[in-house]
Length: 157
Image 1 (cartoon, rainbow, N blue to C red):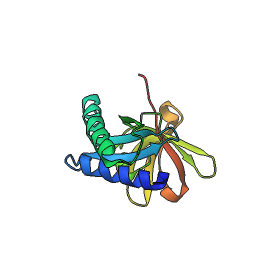
Image 2: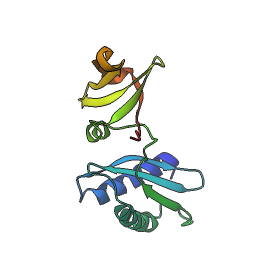
Image 3: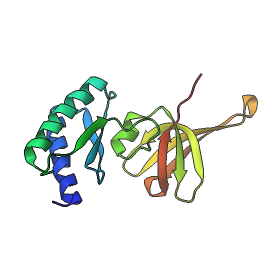
Image 4: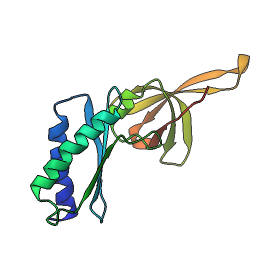
């Protein structure tokens, strides 16, 4: 079984396991040459460590039983994508509306502001320029075709 087939098989297993809780969704899956499998899950209300541990056990048992890795040598990590990772799915944009973001466009320019809206075609980011009486608030509409990456900004007050 090649890497692509392994990825498809494990993706199917993960999606079947998390189907019991519709708030959870698969963001990504990686298989390294050392058979280290990384599963990235997200949820509308955030991902708990306990749930990652639970899913890890269920997924591990299914992979082991399937014989995808005939030698039985593989490792599995189940986690959320992490704050530093770019948003990959539309559902992540919806989950993070109202949060500060940094959007890198395909032309290399960046837009920072608050994610106000996300639909199938574009996102809206509220930006601020200036301070006090010279403060200007602008709502920028950015088509997904122009978005290279979007990252959540962590703001310490």
